[in-house]
Structures are given as structure tokens and as C-alpha cells.
Image 1: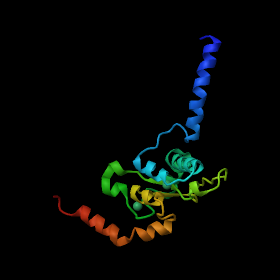
Image 2: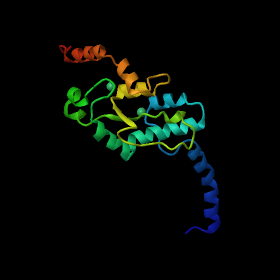
Image 3: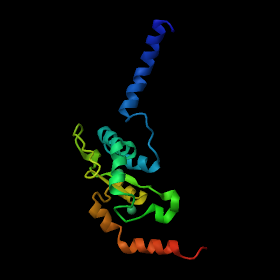
Image 4: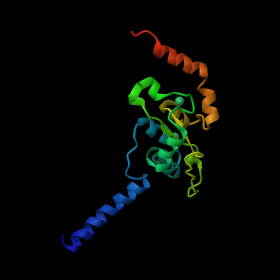
Length: 163
Ligand SMILES: [Zn+2]
Ligand SMILES: [Zn+2]
């Protein structure tokens, strides 16, 4: 063991860093540039923290895993099916989206994590749209936006001749 005063000095050095890290929303890095861009739309540290909580709930929680089992693997916005388009690589791939915009709730509001009621499953594109500032916020809205015709056009292009 190092002498006590050395430990005390180390602790004194670490504490401010630790507090800074906590105030920034934790140790997990944001996954990608889109998340960082979305986060820039949050106005306060509280909103930012809640946004990160939102994304970590969607990515890692047992509730989000259960939501995928409950809702299945076809996008509830545009009906995109990863397995149909990507084959085995797309099997059981979907993203869970928590339907309550946590960043807009007052802090310390209890957040419900019911896999059936509080989550939807979305393809990556629809999920991005749901997180855009001024984007759709409900399943009804994203469905209306992802019009059937647009999706059919996309799929018929996919089936088209190879270039
Ligand atoms: Zn979709
Ligand atoms: Zn989401």
C-alpha cells in the first residue's frame, strides 16, 4: 500500500474529474455523431442527462430487450424487415425506442419502462427521425410520414437489376 498522504493526494486529484464526468452524463461515450448532433439540441444539462439516460435505456436495458421480443423485429414505423432485406445478417435486428421523450420531462419524474406500453421497435431510419428535433414523436406520426408508396418504391429499387 502507498503511504496515506499519497492516497489522499490521489483522491483529491480524482474527485474533481469524477464530478466533472458525472455532470457530463457518465462514462459511456455517445455512440455516434448523430447522437451528438441530437444532443446539441438539448438546451440544459438536465435535458442532456435525460437524453443520455433515454438512449442508454433503449440500448442496454432488459426492458428494451423484452420490448423487442414483445413487438417483434419489423419496424412499427415503415414495416421495414431487416431479415427480408439483409438475410441472416438482419435476423432479429431492430432498435427499441422509448416512447416518452424523457429529455422533455421534469427531472426526477419516474419513468415507466413497460416493454409493451412504453416501447416501440423501429428501423434505424425511423428511429433517427423520431429523435430529430421537430421530428415525429408518436407511432401514428412516423407511420403517416413513412408512406406506403415511398417504402414500396424503395423496395422495388432494391429488387431492380444490378448495376
Ligand atoms: Zn422504419
Ligand atoms: Zn429512441
